[in-house]
Length: 400
Image 1 (cartoon, rainbow, N blue to C red):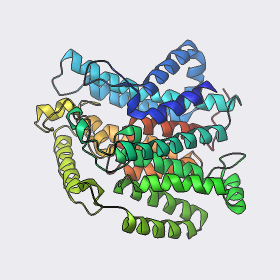
Image 2 (spheres, rainbow, N blue to C red):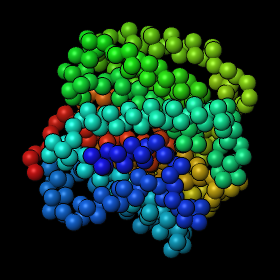
Image 3 (tube, rainbow, N blue to C red):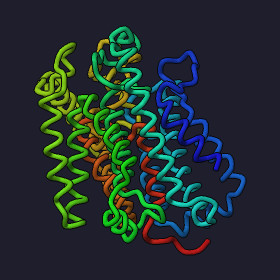
């Protein structure tokens, strides 16, 4: 299936697949282009799209939050130029367009043109490829400090692969391990998961999973470590089996002891500088939230809100974190207010209740990670989650 191939390429390329536009505030990536094509396709089949939305409660809750985000942008209290309003609108368009990955995958599965295992294999191949590329990067290009002027953090002797950020890469690797944990030869249901566990993992799968895990360790991303622990903890409670959790904790402790610590502040797992930065970041977010608690500053107007209230880095345009906060829920609260935060939490809750174990565990990991980085609005995480949610629905919508 061409779409799965394009998704694989998009996930592997990450931010490296950016289309140069000459505007530092606008970034167009391969998954954006694919999503735009999906929008055009579904608009040409509008009657089918409308039937799908009417029959799928997840789609309805998504529209509720997207509508609040649009209202917050239109009614933004921040004085914006037409260009700035357009740029903020483009990011809302991206958020909406990625939902069409869910719509398309759901319909392809219902039409039996692809199967859930094909989707899982697509994601696993992407994550394993990122691991292999990550080791090549670690050996050939371990120093990102020369790209600091472009807004990338000065990571040294950490694996960041094509994502240029070990924290986001770390979550992608955690999601890969989750997909591998529940992989089966028949379906992604919990019944087939039990069969997979009883039969044991193949030697190849164990070796590949080990590669991904070691790559994750060399990101030195503590938020990603916690996300993995939270995912396995949730899985263990569901399965009433804590053997894997104990093994994971033991291996993590061993990794922490054995990981090399020389060649940069970022490889020090006991570092406090990033924690202090996140505390200050959170304080700034709360300050902005209290100014406009109902509908916020407007969806994705944070860059301009920070400039208005002098809450920004020395290079607010080039800084890749300038349009967000280090917490996805804080980002939603500040930009769309209490109304938007409630709508977003209801959307997450409904998605969580109506998916299978692989999607549930993926969501748990992403939420934990999103407490430290704005992961839930990172394009490739959005892509991954919508794809896995589409392939792991446990309650079918009414027939279209």
